[in-house]
Image (cartoon, rainbow, N blue to C red; front, top):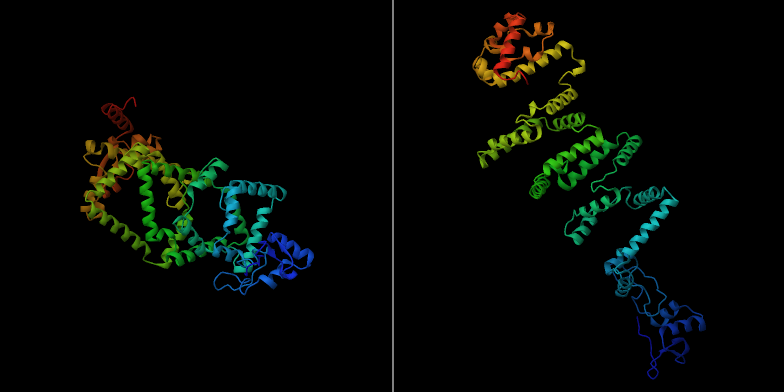
Amino acid sequence: MKKFRINKKTKEFICEECNNNTSFTTIGGLGLHIVKTHKISTKFYYDKWIFEKGDNICKVNNCNNETLFTDILTVGYKPTCCRKCGAKLGGQTFKAKCDDLKNQGKDTPFNSPKTKEKRKETLKRIKEDDPDYYKKRQEKIRATNIIRHSDPTYNNPEKCKETKLKNHGDENYVNVEKCKETKLKNHGNENYNNIEKIKETFQKHSEEDPEFFDKALEKRIETNKQIRNVDFPTQDPEVIKKSLETLNKHVEEDPEFWNKRQEKIRETKILLYNDPNYVNIEKQKETNKRKLEEDPEWKNKQIEKQLETKKNKLKENPEYENNRQEKIKSTNLIKYGDERSQRSKEVKERMRNTREAKGLWISLENKSDWELYKRLVNRATEENLLLHGIKYINENRQSLRKQNKLLKTYSDKLTVDHKFSVHEGFKNNIDPKIIGNIVNLRILTRSQNSKKHVDCLFTLDDLLSAYNQFLIDENLLNS
């Protein structure tokens, strides 16, 4: 761009079209004179008298596209051909940034609270006028993505990572605090998720395409393989390490972290499935089946991995197993009021529901009265062996197992026998707790027990008398 000629005496701008006969104090006055007197555009005048080679070429390296004229004589042609090139060259001009700082309090209008508020109001008004606005907007974005990238859901992950790394120093940055703040403000819950909307969307996709979930899973696995070389992020050693570090950090900050986490999981399961202990058994079976098909040795490898992990921990700390058992006992005591969780009514019920769902146990509804009676007697028997076995018959379940390991013949192995048989107890409608009580138990070999069959060693009166004496001896008569 050439310099405007100036009259040395008057210091005014000279009009080249008037052959030095006319001059103006401002460039604006010169511009008006050119348009009104000479009937030509400012662009024509600029190209004829001010233009220099390269003025109308984009200043970004290797672009070389032509730029547009600004209609301002002092500026001439724009320095860049488009916004992208403008961003590469440095974004807004210094003057524009100064104007924004003055008017908006920010270096760009989009960062201004005033502008943000105005945008929200505009979007709200548009949505009220057209309830399908966002839907149409998404369809428009998808259509544009198909035209430009042949993919309706296209996004540029590399560019996204690059920007996050530049702005926040982390390519996977997510403003968690801002998300929580917004959710708390809009929904009164910092962990809010629109579950109904998610379900509705999934249902819609599955109706449109029955193979939607399979395709989504395949795409997810494919993406993970490209990025991390594993099927799922949780299989990546780096992700595992980072997860452990994060969990340890949470536990240090809040000792109740695990309890709160479990409670949150239960709440979510109740919300989604109306069951605090929900487990997708079918999904587990499918996953295990797929993994076994991919690798027939997968299950053995998992067991070996667990044993190896335990072995390494024992090497690091010889007291690891004892500490682990103590930790389990203390946790069970806090949660269930007993060192053994299996004694808890809640755990027993949960175990039954799980095993019934897996088809391992017959549901209580389908069991006959006889089967239910045997089950209750067996439970009472095991409890009495545990609590009173050593005192009354010098044996408990653990000691029987040790002895049976030494006995090779099945018929010689030891078992628990009921003196007043379970069969007769059922026929006479005797309380299962009495039939399973320690006074009604003795140790026999399996062959002796088979020969005895349903015979009784003593009468019902003898049994009741012995049971009452047991209650007196153990101070349980009033309990």
